[in-house]
Image (cartoon, rainbow, N blue to C red; front, side):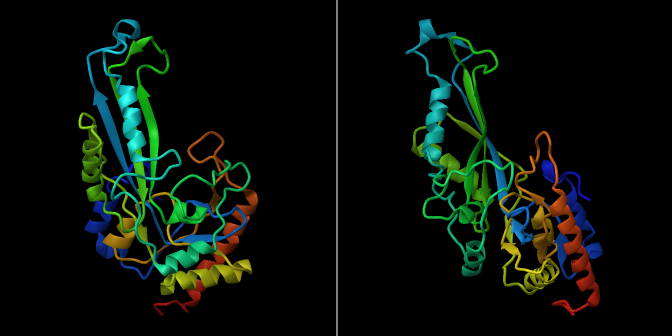
Length: 306
């Protein structure tokens, strides 16, 4: 049971590397995340990476009366808004050179083509025009990089004053798929901002991003788990090459060199990280059946590694 995942799983990588001999295995099987639909058993074999960063612009000391100084002083909120607009268009298409995903293997495309994304009851309504163009909704969340603004502050939103604020700060992140190098994200952003005249904006990148991982859907262990779950469920299950969210899966996939299979038992409308976070009784009963069948089949021994 790993309790620090929301804080970057401190110590997990070092622990697994130091005690690698304790983790010799044929496969890594775990549970986290939502099913593609509440009533559709699902597996995923990796996760998108996530890179958090901060953009900050300081232009003068303290706030200044907008009647006396409006038109004379730079408004950092306005400048920052234009910087954001240069990075992503009004429909969510990424504009920073090098930040968009570039590859989608045929096996990944084929698996994603079968997916019908949605959160079930309580889920928000999707915008069909948001995100990268010429992609299906499933491709956008499972095979595409996405840029998000997590927070944007200038002035005092809790008590707005008729003043020009001294600074503006943006907290953003990029969810990214395999093929994107997180070590190049900040240099690419710096080059983009400088090119568009935003040299004064300071950027600070995350020191410990979560890295993207993805097991090929045609991997023998992936096909074995799919067959086991489908046998117990009685019909086809959903196969997601990688979760849209992020996990420290690179520790298991890259550092330990294991094929990684995740079997989620929640659903996207569960109010995760919010009030009234919950599970569904029907989905939970299904999960108990599926995992019992999976462990039984593992015990039988007819696995890819014998």
